[in-house]
Length: 115
Length: 110
Image (cartoon, rainbow over all chains, first blue to last red; front, side, top):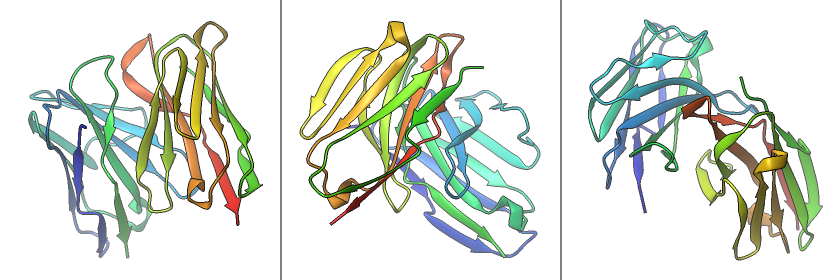
């Protein structure tokens, strides 16, 4: 089946640093990738949608300068949390799909802790 | 935008019991998925079920698109079934996005 690899699985870093999270589709071409954020005991909230070779579309309330998304190839999207602060601590999950109306396949998530 | 509501929010059962989880959505959808999120945060895709009924072992799901709801049935629960169950929909007005429901937190006691 379709596999999405997300790396790293856990990050602990100091306030003010930038953190990059990678999302790779291993056995299919992901024309669209999605980034979600999940706070403890809450649901997943869509942050942005990225199509290969295009600028990401951000959901309302998500700062595009804070959360930089790059989808430079059909198998890789990256999310960079710039100048991270403790309130950015959360669980970030990516997903990917190859075309419309197909299931999204999810990575295992990245637990980000900012001290 | 579309609203996706799940019930019950929490469910505690003894091992061996059966359960039914419900997902209501406020608009027409073209896709619906059920996920199980385990204690490590991994999302396990259970069913891709925009309509009809599917079964996989002890789990089955039914979506009645015309009435805007889906049900997930878990029979003979095991402790490994514990976790959070999410339904997620892709709706016609925005075919690209998945909107997640609020989830049902299931705890199976030995």
